[in-house]
Image (cartoon, rainbow, N blue to C red; front, top):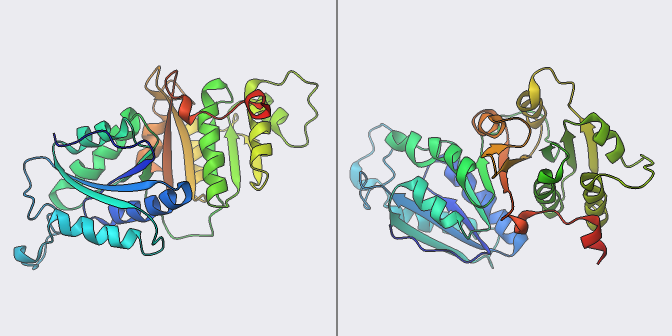
Length: 306
């Protein structure tokens, strides 16, 4: 496999020429510009597709000779990425290997990994279809999956689903940074009604707040420009995945966590992140957590005060 570790401040995008991957490049370019990061566009050839015609066009009369090569597709996407961000550093690579493993290897040191939720043509279920779900389950860095955006009313910002415990802190921190970077309001949906009540801006805690509430207050202080709404979905009959899916339908971005100690999302014994990656009607961000994920964690109130 022709991959090597990428610099930490790099956002990696899986590209296959599909509409979803084009949206992924567009979103990743905005992310990279906001984070002052480098953008790496990558196309993986798994041996069944040639370098000259890797994108396998949709069925139709188009001649095979007009099918763009992987290098041409990447060059075109790189040009699109810099259209609104002329100072953005964009690199491209075509590598050999299974797309899943290629992107998982790059995720070891990448800042973010961005992929579409569907590929195109005969590789629809291989390059970006089932790949996105596996990356969300296994990648070492946060994974952004470009779910379809159905037409509808104006969207209402960033939604983050948390259990309101210590495992949720890196997820909450990512959501705050995303909301601040794109100047969007933030909705915090928790499945603990008591913690939700104490996390309201108007609550009057008597001290000794849970770490989650302390971190939420600290992040509010760090990002005073972010409008925050906290509410509980503990009573939702459909469970966490249904509650988040319904709420996410009118949001720009949904942020959820994956507990690396169990391999599952935080809000149930498992299945929430997988469900949302397949069914949410908005962009989904899956943030890995665990003892070796300190770089993604939200700071505590004590850390911010020092």
